[in-house]
Image (cartoon, rainbow, N blue to C red; front, side):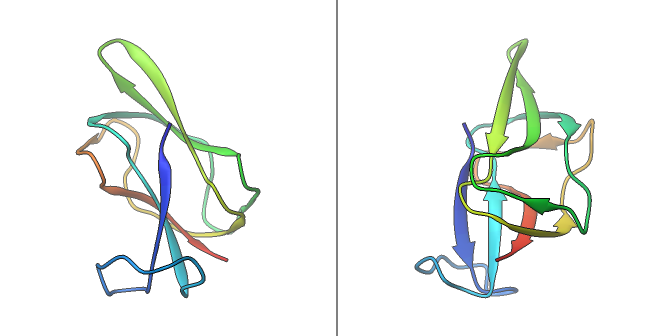
Length: 91
């Protein structure tokens, strides 16, 4: 499963939860198979936001906190590395 990492927008570094922007990041390398949200969508904690494909398996990436989608960083068909940002949320 993907994990959520909170960081201040534009900082590129990690901070404790409660920052101004939350990022849902890939937990492994793979191809974005399906993006399940769009900018403006409100997501809840535990909701799948992206499905990655790796080694012929589908891996859901889940938001660990709720918020509003402000940016989709990787589109369907794009290859991502471990820890790359997939979706940005505004808490």
